[in-house]
Amino acid sequence: MKTRSRSRALRTPGGLSLRLDLRAVVVVGLFLATALAAGVALIGTGDAHIPAADVLRTLAGNGTAYQDFIVNELRLPRVLVGLLVGASLGLGGALFQAVSRNPLGSPDVLGLSQGSTAGALVVIVLMSGSATQVTAGALIGGLVTGLAIYLLAWKQGVHGYRMVLVGIGVSAIVTAVNGYLLTKADLVDAARAVVWMTGSLGGRDWDQVWPLLTLCAVLVPLVLAHARGLRMMEMGDDTAAALGVRVQRVRLVLMVCAVLLTAAATAAAGPVSFVALTAPQLARRLTRSPGPNLVPSLCMGAALLVTADWASQRAFGADQLPVGVVTGVLGGGYLLWLLVTERRAGRI
Image 1 (cartoon, rainbow, N blue to C red):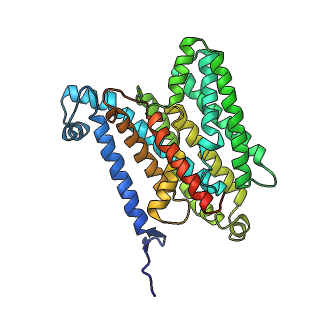
Image 2 (cartoon, rainbow, N blue to C red):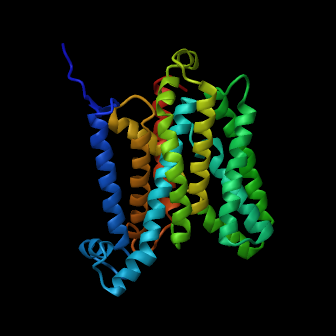
Image 3 (tube, rainbow, N blue to C red):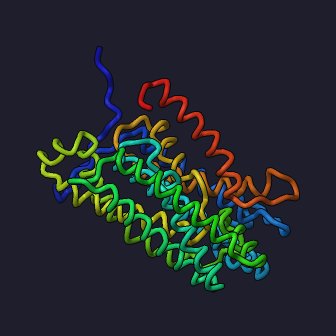
């Protein structure tokens, strides 16, 4: 019985060719549409409600002065930070899961988020630092934690399961350090730290947008340039090396990119939990496509976080929850389901 291929090859006049999976293209389009629709709805949400048509008109430069201030100065930066943070976490999670070859290999499990939290807590508790210093501390904490995991997991290369086990151990240690830092904080700093640790997009402005946008503009093309090597590595390191892939170099570059994406996202919005774990798995199941699914994971992460932020403001009446609470509840349920599924399949 013949099956019809879902892939199409595109060729340019210059001789370049690109093979596209039609289902994946459709799914990515749906993710983008969902993210943009949720973003428009989120911009219109608040004490000063603005209809979606007026939001679009204002974004096009045809709104009133009042609408322009509400949309472009107060609410648009929050939505853009949400899209960028979700995209960074989705792509970072896909990279970690592909490199470790484990669906549990995400920044939440490996301790990257906790490392960024530790860096922020050091600045808040010990230095009473400003918001900019907290952001820098979170970024440094994530990088140091990622470097520690890589070095501890190294033994003639980095094996996926070894990296996950080392990451779980590092996560436990860093979580204990975070708890200790909270016990040493005064009441004001402790309250400030707990709010940051929840993960929230509240109060975000253009100062958070531009650094994250610049980092994504550099790292996303770099990741996509190594996508072919990453896909080859899913067949095994020896097979990938035989096909000409410099395995350890590709793995190191992609891990550095994943750590930077995760740390920058955490620095911008706090440790928003489970997006990096959930987005790649949902993207894989919806596209039904083999491989790391980098672009679908990126788009799924953006759609997931902005939709969760909209739900955190509208689904609980007058009570507005931090987005990290919503993603934690949804992601925790998904993690339990994933563990049960993996156990039934005999993989854990």
